[in-house]
Image (cartoon, rainbow, N blue to C red):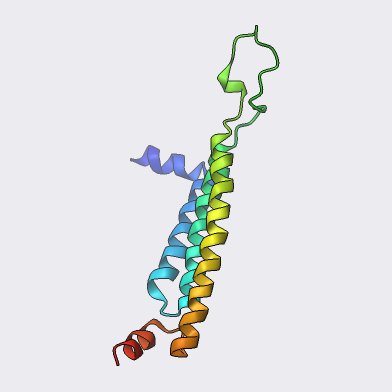
Length: 126
């Protein structure tokens, strides 16, 4: 168990990812303002993107393009393009989710006159 904890402290990227993820999750759970919940969601999504970027890096790797067909392929010399593609997809999903969520929050504010979750629930039950 101590070896596992010691290995975590040698990877500060993992610690930063966990702190960002938990901080965003905490904001989403504890705040009643809908805009603050969206900020927490944005932090969680950004931490996931940070996770993809931080752990897909490979020192000394090159682009995965084979220059000649006769040489044997050595996979350790190439960077895996899948995490980078997932990162681009996650960014697009993040922007789209935030845009739709902000539009819904604006509509909720126009209808109920508040962004507080408890106030909206109280007014919707009347």
